[in-house]
Amino acid sequence: MRKGLFALAAAGLLATTGLAACGDDSGSGSGSSGGGSAAAGKVGVILPDTKSSQRWSTFDPTYLKAAFDAAGVPVDIQNAQGDRTTFQTIADGMISSGVKVLIIVNLDSGSGKAVLDKAKQAGIATIDYDRLTLNGGADYYVSFDNVKVGELQGQGLVQCLTD
Image (tube, rainbow, N blue to C red; front, side, top):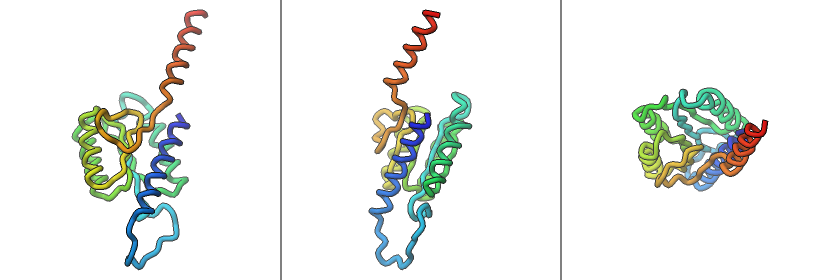
């Protein structure tokens, strides 16, 4: 799980850095020497619910915040509580607040695609985290190594049957 969270944080940081590097700062007259300022790019994370798995309320928010804080990247982590309207409202707020990267764990592909489409229209890099949004077109997809998960499940089943 930590490997996946690290990969997610790395993808978010790369996307944020890439977007910040492409920004037009001509004539701004203000320089920012520190990493992690809002100008460098805030990351928005929308988690799905708190009922399907404890990870969405405890583990992922904690590890994601720690990873982004350690990298000096501002992050806004919110949970949709399993509600499509809340999911959309959170996304709209993050998009209008100017996040540079939007990471979502969709509730379903339909609601996920709607959010990804809005983010794309706003020029925001998108990452599907853990759940792929079918036909969503996220810039990145970060998940578990499903082949390894299957191998471990098979090994566990064999062990249970032979004990």
